[in-house]
Length: 240
Image (cartoon, rainbow, N blue to C red; front, side):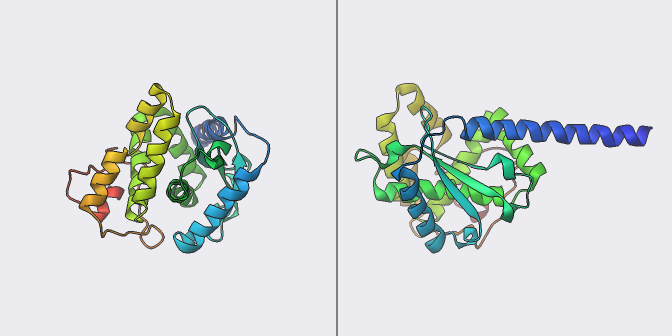
């Protein structure tokens, strides 16, 4: 009886975690879908180029692009909810893009390369997680704002280490012009600012680390803090 109850309790916890995880990604990524258009085609071009030239370890993964619209957000990435129970290489990963990114007033090509590299690094993380780890990550990201901030800064840090900082700076400068004051402050909190990006590039102009060659990240960080541009640089710092 106690053994059976223990199994059921463990199963019940896992079931609840999986349900919460699926709910999070459905709400976060799939709630504002839009009809297809030129946006997904252009975004797919950027993805293919970056996977070929910069992140080849994602070459054999399926990444779909979907138009979506959510106030204050222009890109999101997540495993397709219906595929999360599959092994990582059999899942479908989705990148949701706001069509405003591809209008004449949108960010530069350089900026698009960098911000899509940011999203591809999210997908790279998902490919290293089984369903339990995905569920745990989803709950941390949705419910622990310190973790949320830490994780997005870590992802920006990877983009900087790929020497795509100039484009990332251009993207942040652009997005600040299209957000309201509340949304802009949220972005300043959750991601590197243009000033922080420039400071990092000034201090570490020759640093290059590709996560396809060196990947070691503990998604359940013990101390969720992001590397500061005032600290001594360490390759390991992003993974601590």
